[in-house]
Amino acid sequence: MKQRKFDIHAPGFPLFPKLIATSFGFGFLPVAPGTWGAVFAILVWLPLYLWVAPEVTVSVTAAAVVVFTVLGTWASSVSEKYWGKDPVIACVDETVGQWISLLPVVGVAVCPWWEILLSLALFRYFDIFKPLGIRSMERLPRGYGMMADDILAGIYSAAILLIINYTVL
Image 1 (cartoon, helix red, strand yellow):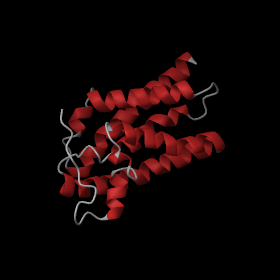
Image 2: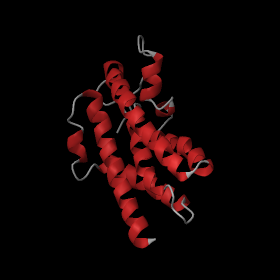
Image 3: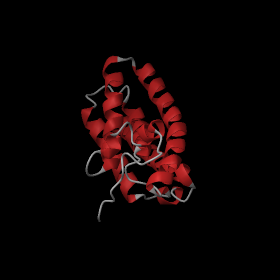
Image 4: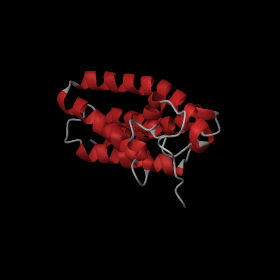
């Protein structure tokens, strides 16, 4: 599949929604911008996880999910005006979905590195293949559809991690 070229200097596209929609520019990285958006989420979340109390990490992550869901819906809607329907470089939806997927990792007693990687793999699986009603979320208009499918992918990923944490570990 041929990647579409996106003008990062799209005339008239305001900087703030462009930064939000592209997860502060990670969407402009070559190849797999959705994965870069998810990796950005992990990179931003990791210092919280490593250096802050679990309760604070969960609270800040949940707050970021809410704030960036609102901002991301708006910025994604704006991005469609300049880059067309559901542009791949608008990856804030992947960032939010990955944050949701990381919530069950907080407070895990064992070394969580494998769980962080599993969180990324599960989220990207659900985001790419869109099973279990995820694809139908894309039918919502504008930024709502762009965000909703990744939020549901994050919820499914988090549910699997919760099951692993409370039945296997």
